[in-house]
Image (cartoon, rainbow, N blue to C red; front, top):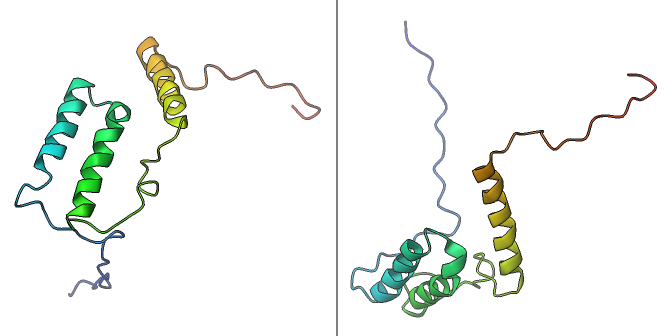
Length: 114
């Protein structure tokens, strides 16, 4: 007895497309600087935002990726970066101290039905 066939799914291209690898090492120093910063900052990418921007700008200038507004790629230059980092540090603090989901919930007020 034959098994039923599944309908074939269509492959879709990536949303941002594909981009060539840097075979000639044009942006190698920028990439190495960024990776060294990540190692030094214990993988804290907020500390390495400027180097990340420099690497992507190098790739765009040398036609290794399409020109794109870096704000759209999540590398917006603003004052909120420090606020986001502080919020993330607060989350890390909760993880280190131990966090119980729902532990900070207020007890429900008794209503007319319950």
